[in-house]
Length: 159
Image (cartoon, rainbow, N blue to C red; front, side, top):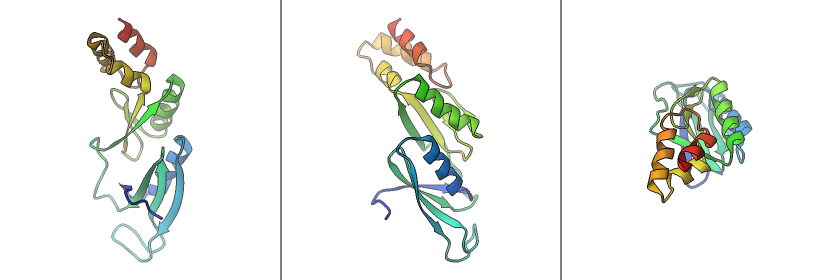
């Protein structure tokens, strides 16, 4: 059964492949029901995968194979809070090395064009530091990064 509030992500024809990758990569992620089209539709034929119910890090989603009319943009992203550098590296590298693309300040895109913020909790703590000078130093260090390096953020925070 679909949740009352579910994120619907539009894919060209590869929602199942994306859902499987997310389930393999992110904790608390699963692939649920795969819905096949009961008839032909503009982006596919009867029997093709039409929708996939899946969960990404506890968030219910539906992948809709709607065709090439719409693509993902940075206006929507998943932000994944990481606990340490190993987790940050693992998730970032999984996305980028699977046909994805690096971006700035902890952002990257997967091969389906979906944007991800792989954000260490240490970064959030640093830029929220009550010592505004420390927060600014950490923020300025982050602005120079692709993947976030926690040791560099913490060093900048300390001054």
